[in-house]
Image 1 (tube, rainbow, N blue to C red):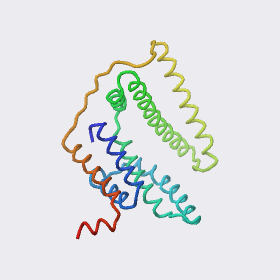
Image 2: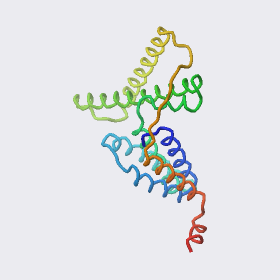
Image 3: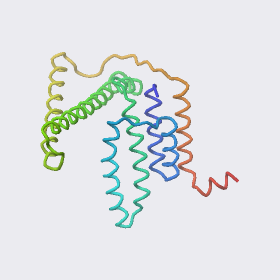
Image 4: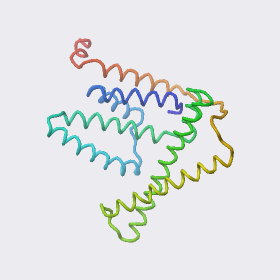
Length: 216
């Protein structure tokens, strides 16, 4: 989806649908398969440990009397939507969205913060990949012993970049807000995807028994 407004609204609708009920999660998963349904190798490497972590908490929930299967299904669909949203995001889009929603002052500030946060995430992923490459070249096996030093390097690098960015903005005289005229491209496929997400939300609120009654 090219329009950040529709993409963000669609992601919110799908996450709400998946969280509400299993039918909503199933419909949101079908939406994901139809309109996205693709993974890069980097995303697969990330989603496997995330899925394992969710599976662990699902087992704990099931052992304590909760519905672990339902939790796992709904959370995995939400994770898929989140990965799609992250993969589709382009630099500067949150800034445009913020200005469109809340104006040149508050919207500009929030949009800029969101874009800077997204840039930080990209840099953290890049740094993590560099650490993995260095460990491979040195013959070090990834494990708990290497996790703490790697985390320290990532956090220290993120804080250092944040400090440098703050100093640069102060030197350039930035105070608050800014002028921006956001422009958006809205193809027909984006509108169709958004309307389909709205249908998914409706399905999430309809009980399964009521659905079959309506079908008859």
